[in-house]
Image (cartoon, rainbow, N blue to C red; front, side):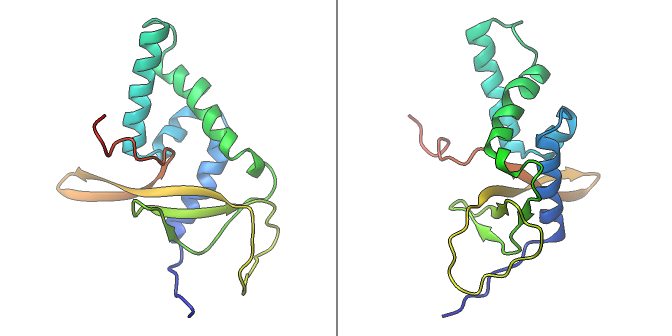
Length: 155
């Protein structure tokens, strides 16, 4: 039985390519603007823990993001650096219901797979961040870097 999968939006595609461009740069401000609120909160907590273990003045938050977080995330997508990455046009969903984009390496022309095919993909989770601005709810796609369920149970 053939299943109709939704297509990714232009906003999601643009986010994926912008993220790939920024993750290998030193533009901390732009990187930070692409990350979801939930991951920003986690990174703040990780910096606090790092500071507690290494001394409060060991590294500023900005330096922590630039020298520890960004390189860690860039490593996850290192095979997509400078080699014509592409993004699948099919939108998938994570177990948590967030958007799941498949990034591919060495895409020089569009590919169409009509049968089941095994291809190396680099998943990129995107989620909708919302905020209330001047009487309106503003919704925007953001990148989710941490995909675990540590938040679900009190240990």
